[in-house]
Length: 332
Image 1: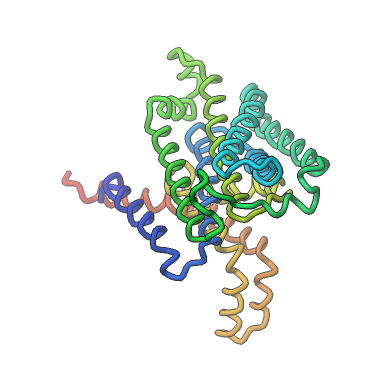
Image 2 (image 1 turned 135 degrees about the horizontal axis):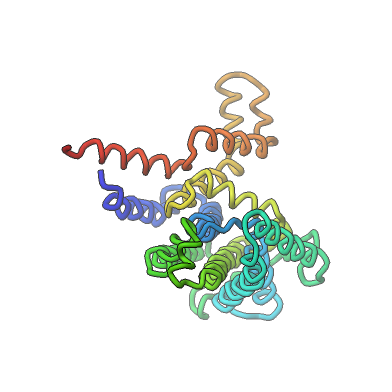
């Protein structure tokens, strides 16, 4: 089976599933949260999976944009679309600053620069008065989109969120398959060779940083609009760790991998307690009732299993298996 021909069908079925999800009993707010994290993971994958730059500071883009969007809508009185634009621009600006310093170093040194700058933003958000400190920025109204669509309705907000996420994902797809994206792949595979061909690799890496940060910022802005708050957990280093986990579990360097990885991680965090209660009822073992209190342990075990058994991630292994079947089916 040709995976390139199968991919549009798979994405089409996924889109159809998301369109009918609210009418199939899915909780709209939960699915919207899942979509925001899927977009966040896809933005991170653009930087690591296709450019080869590991960032431990992506929480800065998610959380920084979340706070600016919340402040602009709640305090400054801007409309939701302006709040989303400001949040996206905030992510892009933070990406420009962080990328400017990070690309001047290689390997772990560049990664630690992103972590250090993200932690600086975390402590700034902890101290700044408008962020609400440990309480976070609460009570962000959804308002009316373009003065027409009332986003207070979860159903209306759901389809607006779906349109935004799909549009942003298409931007990522177009970026990857453009000549610019091919250069990024070349930089990841062999940067000295790309330099020898005349490419200014630092300029390409910085632009990749900005695009990734802007889309991550959009995810944070959308998350604030959906949930009505922005908290310190959005800018904490653990959020950066989560997006790394989502991408690796799903499949690094694949378009669909971050979508699956984010779904696995978010559903584990939100549904592991229910699953534990089900196992306790099924097996009569009371210990399973405490499974919801051990989300971090379970997530860690899933990560270890994926790293050991699925080196390419879940989608990466599936794509590789399909390619092997297609190759074995060809006449020699």
